[in-house]
Amino acid sequence: MSRTSIQAIGGGVTRQVMRPGETWGGRLSPDGRWLAYYLRESGDFEVYVSPFQNTGTRWLSADGNDPSWSPDGKELYYGAATG
Picture 1 (cartoon, rainbow, N blue to C red):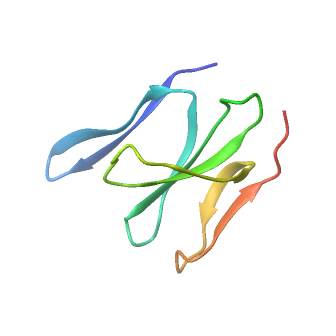
Picture 2 (picture 1 turned 90 degrees about the vertical axis):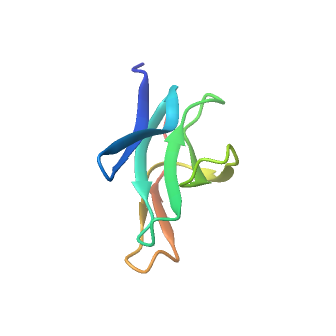
Picture 3 (picture 1 turned 60 degrees about the vertical axis):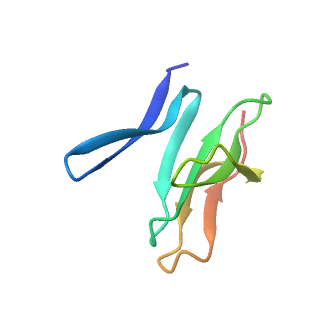
């Protein structure tokens, strides 16, 4: 498996949002406050949501993969969990 990280670029400055790990599919919410991504920590793919400012807090949203935000940012869509 590949090791990836998620970085933000703004004002000519790059900052690390997610450290390297088994992280895929980072999607920023339309309002720029939330980051949805998926991991395979427990053996199955799981979708997590974290504040974009990377406070270290994360919430398990669902078993699944490839998260995507609705245009208004009020819903999160994802694929079915398959190993």
